[in-house]
Length: 473
Image (cartoon, rainbow, N blue to C red; front, side, top):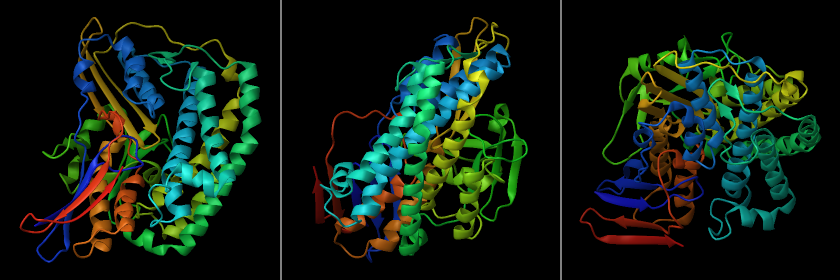
């Protein structure tokens, strides 16, 4: 048995490694995505009052703070057994759309576009956002500005771009000022122009690179996410739906509080990242994907005109349900179009300036489940408390974890396509890493990283002798 190790994977949020196992013929038999560091939020939150959890859990991640803030606040709503005021719900939705927009812009322009625009085999020292700035400064600047717009939404609502302690059990702390609304509305034309430029650019790339579609995680699986009761695209409320690769609805209308009826969680000895699966199918057959690709596959339509037009073309290009993980990039861009349309609607809503923002109540339930769509997929916060509201048990099911099994399948498929023999071409390594980047994993939700780590890939033959080595600083 031979083994290639990529440690760490570059241009993702957090640190992990990939090990690729070869047989005696030098052919790839298996690839694994390892998350080898541990944080333990589920354990050290036990014993704290549930009122603190929204602000505390937002600190899980500097990229996804809003996602955890929303899911946690919704779990608190259930413990209080309240229906939050309509204005509070709309304001939460606005912030979540800002989070989706800024995160998708980060993924596309900063982490993935260097591959599309600079080339898979380009110099790794330049294959990054700085290289993109040098090669295409106008596009790079526009991408940075687009992400900034999403962050501005978060800041104008929550007071700061990162870790806003704003959504709380029962609602939100403050509304949106008229001045902030007008400021954000002024950004919309520029944001829309940049999004459509990126979308057309990526469509052109798809037209000329069918190989990536065929080999980047192109396999059958289930897809899961939130939809409205009538099947529209959803990002904050709604019910759970599972769809298979033929578009058949496998399970539908599942309330968040019932998630344990359909989702099981498995663990492997070689990773701290859990592997959720669709429980009726068992593990690992019940593999499913979440995130932008899944959300576009499970909904009947999005519900806004520009994004619905793009969704029709997306499905035509994919031949129905999109099963290639390379389409995650495409799906993100369409969700950015949708986010801008919904943001425009919400900014024009008079409820943005309401002062009825919070429902008041005590502890009326000893258990609460909050579910929201993070940029990377469906996020679950499940809390059990005692009569005083002190947390007795916390379970977090992170979107990246739900994509764990599909990421393994993706890197295995790519490695089997591109790794031949006992040498390690740079472009091959980058394609294997790019299979992970397609899912845009956010490992801060489950790991802790310190400083900058080098990348070292070593290839050993069946006798354990080092036959090739590639390093990056």
